[in-house]
Amino acid sequence: QVHLVESGGGLVQAGGSLRLSCVPSGRIFRTNDMGWYLQAPGKQRELVALITRGGSTTYADFVKGRFTISRDNAKNAVYLEMNSLKPEDTAVYYCNAKIQTSVITEYDYWGQGTQVTVSS
Image (cartoon, rainbow, N blue to C red):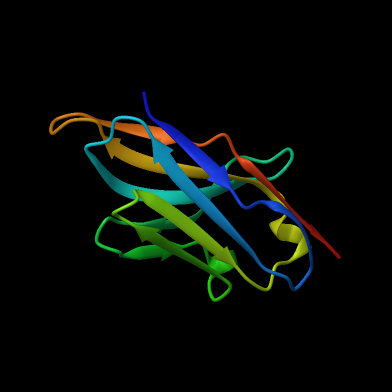
């Protein structure tokens, strides 16, 4: 069983910064694509940023230039550096990872979510 453990959320003033971390635990053969999603109250979950194992990144337009996704393959970890935060960034942020538990088996895992609240 694999679990994604997130940390780093909290309350911050507009213009501030936060760094989210996500570290999987359990039996892991290889971690492939990893990403961060957010879900605001009453809205659907949406993509924030993706990073491939090789380090290629994709960002939602509303975070380009403000957020940076990175990963540490040795730790199977993914991070989200969030700068110039805005009140509209307030949401629950979820880590996602495609993890191989064996050579031939890959599953899609989600973290439990971490709350980010940006005050104006």
